[in-house]
Image 1: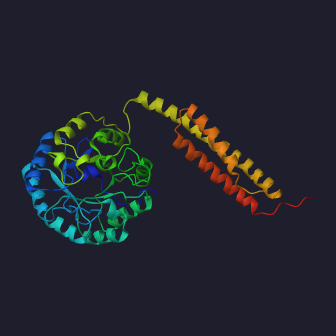
Image 2 (image 1 turned 90 degrees about the vertical axis):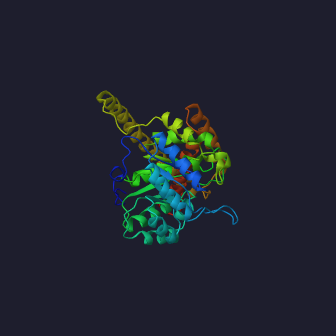
Length: 368
């Protein structure tokens, strides 16, 4: 799945030097003074490239603050004139697109709720035909890779090549420290499928609280994501929306100062030689693991034949529980996480069941 999308490199439409792209600003545009004051403080850090602010806010229930509306676009326009920062906002309808373009907004993004609805994404895509503007697409609320990729494809087919993705985490039934589970594997899957696509991280919506933002921001850099979109407010305590996940411009600057920006490669030949040697070791081990799994499945097939010939069911719940308990103990002793070990065992078990099911549906070979 290489080069699915027609992408214009990020460096050709926004100059960040050798630093990650930083988009920051209030969750919601509340007042002209709030937007302008925040913009000036962010610009003064010298670390922010784009001012963001929500103009239209999709809320879960009616009666909540749903954004200041079109007047907020004029505040962003004025902020750009005074600070030189590019501007960005979320759009969810064709009318939003039209108004944002008329106001001269520089970058648009599609929110998680919109990404989840192909009809909404297509409406936005149709409104963008013939327009040359950068667009970022947030991942859908639920962990559905196909929906995320499909939304990106729709926007790309509308002629938008200055295209990027925003990894903002996914809704989960499990209660954790995060508002939305990062599920980094889905972001990595998108990065593998579309290697030219810039992907930035949204620590604000992943964390749901400002205390965890530095941790997730560093994790994003370690994952080789191209930037961050972080909500910043002059006084988060009085913010009209998502107060807990916004930080002050000063706190943002301090966090960015402490951020270790990694590079995807090194110019050090000694490092490259050592890395190549370690990768050879990994490759050898991976080959051995695959071969051993193949041998394991051969035994599973024999078990399937034995069960078939003795009219025994495939699934043996007690045996499976015993395997999981013993293997998890071993995994912990080897410093492997329970989550990884459980998923690995589940994959092995499912493949064994599939193999045995195939055997069950074949007749035994008659003896000569």
